[in-house]
Length: 308
Ligand code: ADP
Ligand code: MG
Image (cartoon, rainbow, N blue to C red; front, side, top):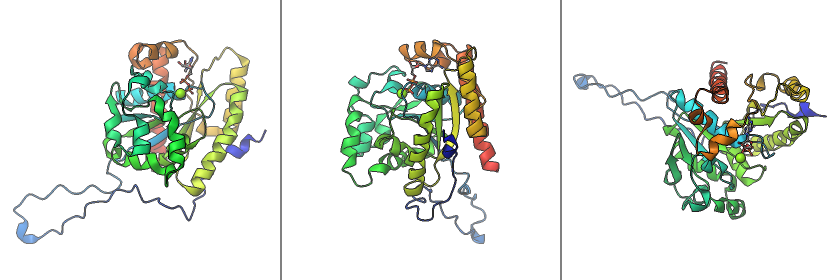
């Protein structure tokens, strides 16, 4: 069924337009002058790689209901528990991520729509709940149309995140169930993409289209973006079908498939009703633990790549 075509390609692209746009400028180190020895030396400017720059991860799958929003929030809260500063960004006009932190997208005055279309600073739409969250409102639905007429329409999110990128360890972006301009904006801003996949055969087929879109973004807009990992969600180990779906995933994606299986449980649907992550709603339950396990894998994966 041609799934091998989805395997990530990491071919470097020579004419990538603005790869260095986001590289922070390092303060030039003052020459040490012997006659100033008595004065305490200034703090050394951090080397470029030590400077804190959030890793940006988009959560994408054009299929709805595969746990993109659930994974963005709960992985974010799990990474926060481990001491990381986290921003989650709600880029879905349905505003489910915003709702799952107890806010009403219909009652929000300024949202990611204003950030993307009117260039409002993203810090103006960040609320602090369990993690920091840049909120969505219903008018985000008009963003694709409004953006489409603008020059640099694919880079609006990337530009907006520059303001806050040094304040967080991770910025996690929840995307709508489509591969439209909002999701493209997330791919352009991101270092990596995590794909939640429901453990069903039919859910796997959409991955080809996702990877084709990602390849297009790599060639034209962001040469570094790649599939960071695949999270099997809504796993029911009692069914042969779910086990087979995982087998197919692993056959085609190998190590990209995380070992953590997010099992099917009603806890994940109950928590957002309370405006809460599952880690706050049921801290010691297996549903919360699953996202802590995934958080460890995501951190380990990032480290493995750094030392590769
Ligand atoms: P998406 O953002 O991909 O549309 P959601 O995260 O909103 O998906 O999840 C869709 C629905 O499934 C929500 O009601 C959510 O609470 C529920 N859900 C998410 N993960 C699980 C799971 N592991 N088991 C059972 N239900 C889940
Ligand atoms: Mg969603």
